[in-house]
Image (tube, rainbow, N blue to C red; front, top):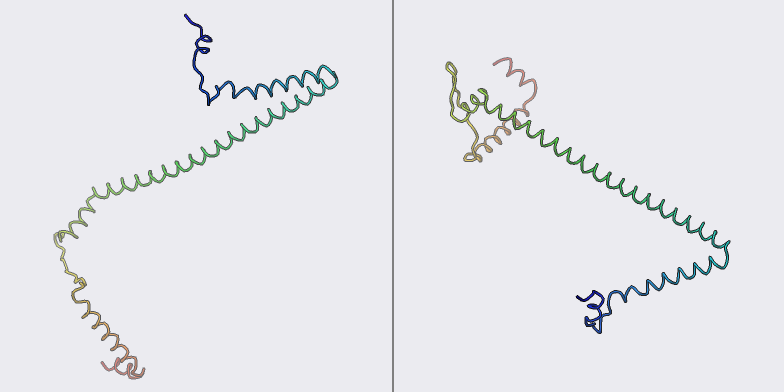
Length: 176
């Protein structure tokens, strides 16, 4: 059986697209240069070594503190958003519970005898024994113009009465 490296060597390469490992090569080169420079500085001057370690240690500590603050801020932000959503959902729950109470009260009212009595009086015209039903005329739009003209005439009559003097009104009141 062939090994993985032998299979890779036999696979054809595309001319226009270099393999992915070739794209990472400049990064590796930069890291290699960094370590070479670090090695040169450390080997040449031991004082620079301690100073470099102190600086890198401080940078590392600052990065850790910054990361902790970032994580803490993110947690606080998520907590605040969840609390806000929770309050809104609690408000919706309270509204729905109030609507349920109102509907339950309405159902109880519809089941009561007083509702049945009121509806039978309104819709069916029923009455209790010993009561007298009095028909009340309702205004319709059929005679709307006649009613408005009658009201205008009634208003004009009042204005005529206002033109009479006060002592005549008293005289008419006392004599009649």
